[in-house]
Amino acid sequence: MIQHVAWAITLIAMGVVALSFLWVAAGAGEFAEYPGIVERAYRLRKALFVILLAISGGVSVLTLGDLPYATASVAASQDGTLRPVQVVEAVGSRWQWELSPHRIVAGRPVQFRVTSTDVTHGFGIYDDSMRLLAQTQAMPGYTNVLTHTFQRPGTYHLLCLEYCGIAHHGMMGEFTVTSH
Ligand code: CUA
Image (tube, rainbow, N blue to C red; front, side, top):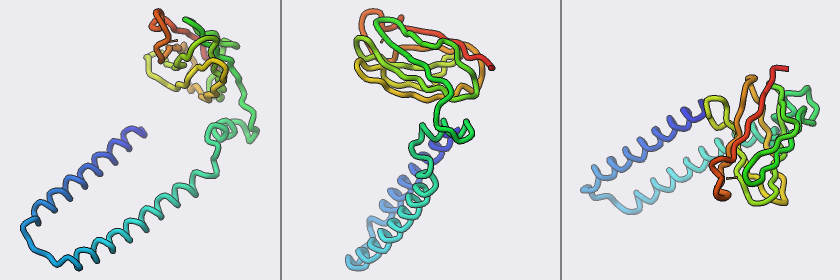
């Protein structure tokens, strides 16, 4: 959904750029007074500035209240308490994943605490049709926190997303999300 919106906005912006190129090219032969052009450019710049200020200000006011975003998504699904329901320790090592606990409940946020025992791995969570749902890095000596809510019960897959040696391609895992 959000990709479609982003794609539409990109197309419109590209159209605007293309049109302005055409407009400039069409008027290239005409002669115009320099001071007049400068004045119009300044007016345009001022208008753009005000529009940008309004947009960024509006977006900030609408979204700042949710900061930090990960915590907000956890709190929202939990009647106001900030503690995530399910904490899962995820440890990567050449060339396997270890999750504890192994079972996860759908519809409630999961906080994956991701780390590694050796080199950096990429922790990628895929659904059963191998669509990437969420990802972060598994780094030695550091814990990355990744929060995700599984909407549907089923089997989910882990794939390593960072080249980590000879058996990197085989570094896969699996876990089950249950309905309750
Ligand atoms: Cu672990 Cu690639």
